[in-house]
Image (tube, rainbow, N blue to C red; front, side):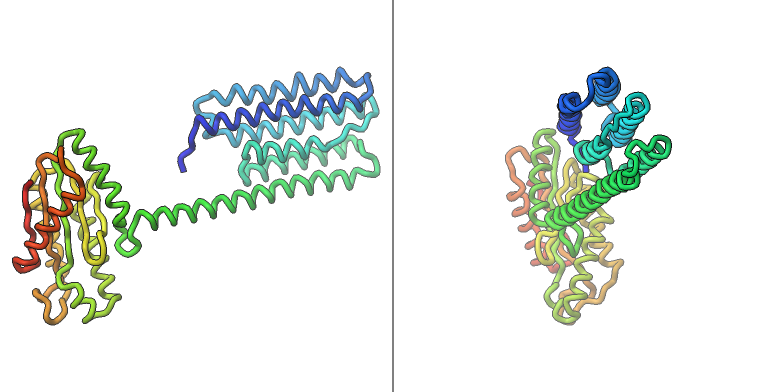
Length: 354
């Protein structure tokens, strides 16, 4: 899925600024609890270490490749903020015998993982590094005394919950995206033929007509219909009938290979091809190629069918100019040509120029 870069960058910058504001808010609360002898140390950590780190990431967000690398940047931000907090815990204990709380470690993790969107695998890596850092801190300086084991367990457990919640969220988003993609494909493509559905065919064709009108190029519309399809279906069953539909779609894809060629199932055994910037001679050759490929397929038809082998009839309308026409009108003209091909004996094409 394509990312809307401006809106995503704006959201991330706002989240980073909110994070910086939260640091300042917690500073106000912490300063009310800390002894005055520790103000200088605490302010140094928050204003000269943590806030500059956050604002450095805000500045980095203006880098043109930031979106591609943002997850790694945010993982680095989380590690930097966490270890800055570990340093503060260490110095507060070593120099002032003050037990500074570790809850900031957990807040940083949840904010960076969820507000900034560090993905699951990277969240696992950086939180393992942060857990190991906390265990190392407790080994070097058992700040919390006999509460070291429960403190370590609480930090590790909280970061595990953070990572697991990220996993569940990423999994849910992935399943939702897969479902949306399947629904989108079902709405745009006919499940049997894997060609455009009637609705999507119309939408794409209208756009191609508008483009052809703007660039003043020719167009052709072909309507294809499997000959005596009901007899084939009744004789060989619906499963074989479905297979004939798939063969028709496959033949169409073999003949029409340009990115601008629009191929769709119009309904039942009827198909439509919409072509732009094409010569009448090319359209004629392509219609002939469709018939030739059906002959090569050599599928036996039902008894009572017009021809012994499965075939299709094709009506083609060619328009040198589409200035004053609509896709509906072109389809109607192609349908008239198809009716004429059927009346003339089937397994053939009729092309008309308008």
